[in-house]
Amino acid sequence: MSKKSNLVLRTPFRERLCHWAVVLCFFLAATSGLSWFYPSFSWLSSFLGTPQLARVLHPFLGIAVFVGLGYMFTRFVKYNLPAKTDLIWFRNVKGVILNNAKQPLKIGKYNAGQKVLFWLIMLSIVTLLISGLIMWRAYFAEFFSIPVLRLAILIHSVAGIGLILLILGHIYLAIWVRGSITGMVTGYVSKAWIRHHHDRWHEELQATKKDVKEGKA
Ligand code: HEM
Image (cartoon, rainbow, N blue to C red; front, side, top):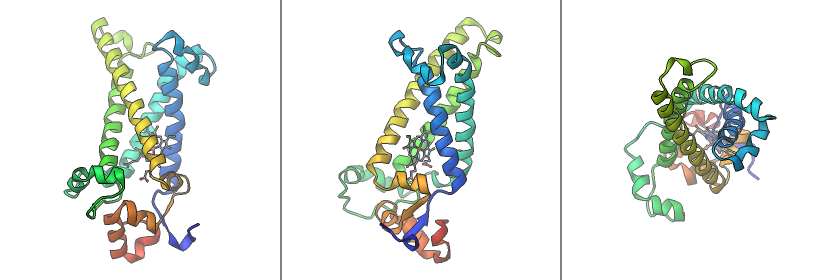
């Protein structure tokens, strides 16, 4: 076990709370959405009580996911902007997977793969929101023609499946990189974890020693 002095705050409380609230709302929105794809999936709506309740709550849960991710966007975007050093990560992706990269990868607070995932998640949720509002029968669908509604339903379905697949990948990687889920639960990661997975962030923290405890570099 790491001593507290050996830990660095990676994700503050409000961001963690928002992340886990998004996880809950996303789970309920995704399962209810999937329940309408095939009759054999219909049991998936039971997480929201009844199929009728799922029908009513699904759009509101989707909006909650959008709002939560909107907040996360404002807090995390600065760490997910492209950097020249991301090219080193892409060139050495095999070494990353096999855990035997031959050179320092110069990884900042988030690696290039996480950055790509971040932007794809944000793109998917915006697509889901726009297409979802258009097809929302209770409020907006009547303002659009049938071909537009059909297109919105197609786009909503593709973006929904796409986001579910991205999140399955995100969960797999979170489990794969030991210590990262603990980081998202407690907020803290060890200095050894940072040195191993985010070498450039580690160097930046070292350079601004006073901020090391807060993980602010
Ligand atoms: C059980 C499900 C999930 C688990 C275990 C999980 C785990 C994690 C972990 C461990 C991190 C921090 C990674 C790090 O510190 O390097 C993270 C970040 C993040 N997660 Fe999740 N997550 C889950 C579901 C979701 C869902 C459903 C969404 C959105 C729909 C989401 C969006 C994000 C975003 C946007 C970040 C910030 C990543 C970045 O800034 O690049 N997560 N997640």
